[in-house]
Amino acid sequence: MGIIWALLALSVMIFVHELGHYLAARFFGVKVERFSIGFGPVIAKKMCCGNEWAISALPLGGYVQMKGQDDTDPGKMSTDPDSYSAKKPWQRIIILLAGPFANFFLAYLLYFLIALIGIQSYAPVIGKVLPDSPALQAGLQEGDKIVAVDGKRVATWSQMSALLAKNPHRFDLLIEREGKKLHIHVTPKIRNVKNIFGEEIKRPMIGIAPAERYVTQRLDPAEAILYAWDKTIAAARFILVGIEKMIEGVVSPKEIGGVITIVDVTAKASQMGITAFLALCALISVNLGILNLLPIPALDGGHIMINLYEMITRKSPSPETLYRITYVGWIFIIGLMGLGLYNDINRLLGAH
Image (cartoon, rainbow, N blue to C red):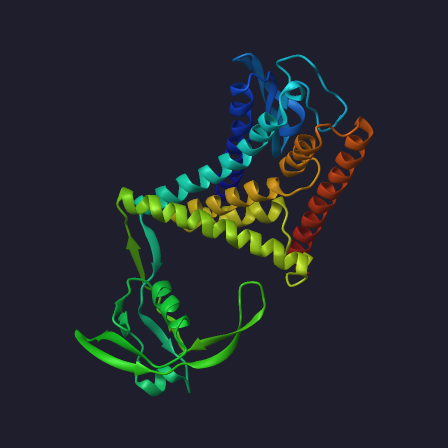
């Protein structure tokens, strides 16, 4: 059942991305010949609203086939007024941006929905105190609930951790123990730890771990609007930093996952509850939007760069140049997909 939910979620994200392109194209009067979910042979189709709606055999993507634009044949253009190639460069750029924007907007809506349903987080309750740690020396105990850090109240473990990470010096913890409130002063130790990208960083640590207790925060619509915005921006930054770390060599290419990994992780998230599932879908949607904006030929970002070139130079690249850069882009994309699939297989075999 989890795999079905995962495939359904991916189909929705792809549909939303292509719908963005479709609506922008229609707004500028571009004829859309086919709107397809999936690639390859068409297995089902229906004519509606002046274009063909199709489901294709390989559900690993999708496309909007506009008149005068074809990534498999970059030289295929049309001078008809209802064609993509006849539109001004800035209009084409908006059509191209509409797909990634739709993914960002979908992520925003998902985060907004999560805020209304309830954000589930670890409670600020100590589950374990490490031996020879500042926390043990200060007298913290398992089961202590941390109410405030330096007078700032906390409702979740992550809020508490964020405050502790900012302060390498002695701080005051207000805790609740057996119905009584106590003030305990703790001085952290600076230790080498690894961040999410595997880099060693120095961080103040006191030596505590959370208990298996959770709190659910439900936000009102006004708070949910701000929460959704912050989470969408945070997700975009996380993905951009991840790409940067991969270029720098900090993150190994072995960490690249393909469609098998995406389906597997999404399926597992669906079994953890609705909020975990929606949060992962939001992150994948942002990831889809950002990856499509990369300046790689055959992706939206590559087409945007070509149109920017045309706006600046007042001339379009030659058909031969378009062929070359498009095929280079396809080679890169296919290679990246192949690497992801190779890593997926290795993970299944236990090699990674």
